[in-house]
Length: 309
Image (cartoon, rainbow, N blue to C red; front, side, top):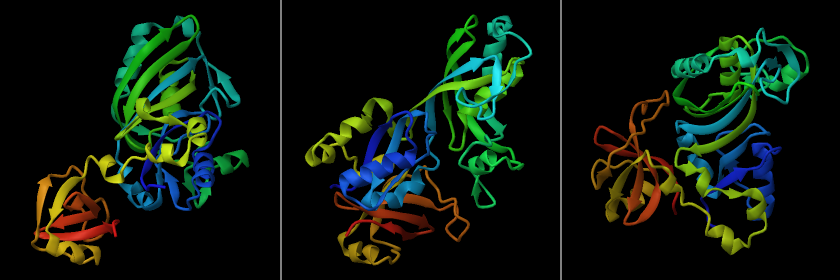
């Protein structure tokens, strides 16, 4: 099988790891991993990397995510969604909530926001998953953290039924369940998430995705045609063209002070705490062949991930 990325439309009821396990067996490949966990009941875009493409997963961390979500007004739950146990019913009826108040609550929930992740989540607390601690009835605290909401727009408001649908574009680490809970508390009636579909994740879009059911029925040749080359998806990384005489040096992990030229500038900089922190990261090519990624610091091109050869 060609190594690269498959844009899977995750079905409801499956964990993200379930999808990888099923694909590992179907594709007969050991190295496989997803980018950006989706809750089991959520659907939508789940990029799955195969083979050497698993080495570039970290470059997707800062990609913006987009979702279409539904929320039900009138009560809160322990999991912050409609599938959890009800904690309490709101202090007012959803039908009493003015639409202007709803729209203001959504408008205010944009920009850099402090958000407390749900206790029923995959976050690790002292080495243990938060949902395992919550299910065991243990008392623990999750600290608020900053996330970014680029846009947060209502697409449907039904006061009589207490239903809101909305589209949100946000940074990694945003919990849509928490958005619903926070806005429900702002409105004074409580709210839970009732549906969630991820419609985009960086390069990947829902309209280009393929269902897991369909891909499991395809031939190897049909699947290969769906595999996206890894370098194509790294759209925020710039591009460097390497001279032929520096090819062997790069493959061997050696830096180059000359023998390359930048053909596209990068939007992506290293966030590591080592000496390369803040250095620009680029895709490296020799001719049309993608070789891997590299830092540029000063005049030096320093290999980060040698993928080809």
